[in-house]
Image (cartoon, rainbow, N blue to C red):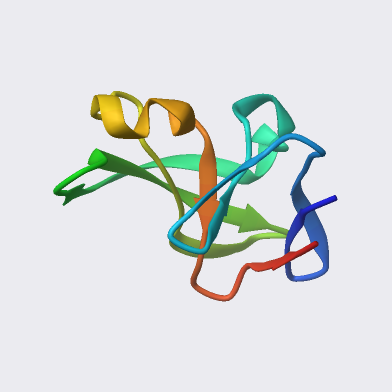
Length: 94
């Protein structure tokens, strides 16, 4: 079961997930919302669409834009709508 952690705290855990380009995407109901703050950052993927980001917060420490998701993905990536993936030091273990 994939688990995402940062600074020793579980951010997300699930048995249901999607893997795209080597990244595990956690369903929206599997993340611990208290650790996620919306970011104004957006990037664009040619085939997935526009990504939005979250800043991760744990015990007063922040990790800007450490999580991303696609709120309105292109049809080729519809399976990851609102699913959250991680980087910037967040570890994902299976």
